[in-house]
Length: 197
Length: 285
Image 1: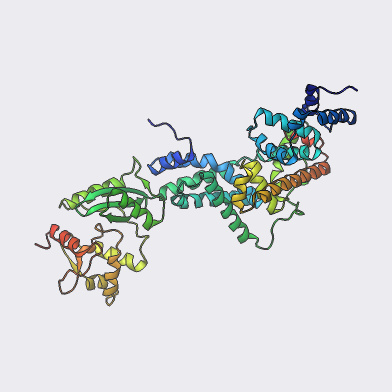
Image 2: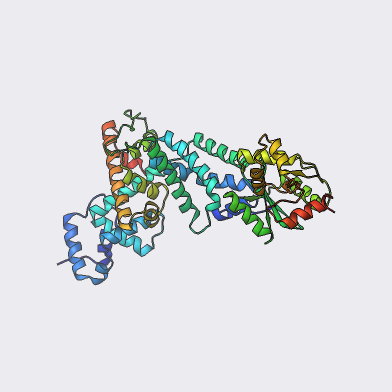
């Protein structure tokens, strides 16, 4: 009876030793991060779903190239990012999402009787809010606030200087807040700040 | 003139409040800070405060840093706005969960990958180590190494440019193939009935290998015979080249193909090995 592996390198080692369950654990462990990143890059939940699957298959195929020189997550996020960017270039080469593009935000606020319903509604709009951010800000904000990566790692992943990465995260958050505020005002949803806690 | 104590000054800047410090209190605070080195030394700049805000998210702040940050945020609208933006952004993005449909697709992709996942098993032979790579689709590659077991596995991995895992406990294919290979090298005549995966071969090479597989134990055929078998009677030189890169020797017995003048021709593992195998099979004496 072996102890279940709890970190990425142990899971990969177990998988290499013939433990199929270790691969499933690795997938379960990272699927949310892969999906969040895909949603961050692509903006659309539908595209993000396809891209998450594509990224995972790319991960399986290139696992042999992971030498453990960097953290597994750094390697995985870079691979996911590249897969999503390729997909984006393939799908709409001339039409990057712009900060004016808020079509993805639904019009109907679906106001509920209580704060929980409003909170749920607000959270359902996440994809739309993200889609409304320019690419240059959306990806750093997602890496920072959805994947909890430090700015130094984000700078490395996106090939940015550290000050540039920090600036994009700050500006991205500000724009995100602006979009939420505007959208909630239009929707007549008050007290949205309290909902986000 | 009444001035604040250090405790009062600190509580003024640290106390949670919804807006900036009221004007009257700010004057008192400023007066205190001008005259108090200790409190002034505890103040931090916006740049430092923002760095601390990033640390705040993961609960990584030391108590002194947390107090300094709280003090700064209480007096600095700009940084407080940034901290709020961070909290709101995190609160919003942290709730993105993988939809069930995505989780299902990812699990299915993993399960499918496992059926194609290459596994490997090695055995020692009189000619060094053999390492076999296979999937549910069949045996795809046999590498030989005189450098040992690890080297044999590494050769497999390099040639296939893929992630090779060791055999799973429930695998039967690899175990059967290795047992039969061991029996073969001991001079017995196992029947290799395990599926072969020719995906490393071009269509031409695959035809050559399949024809070669039909040559019985202990017998030989000339290159020209193989060329005729695959309907390309003039391609006997190309047959020789194809057999030279046979990925499945000795299960695909390319050592049983010789020149028309009964000389041995060539062999990827070297002529002495070809000669040994043919002697072992009883063709040569």
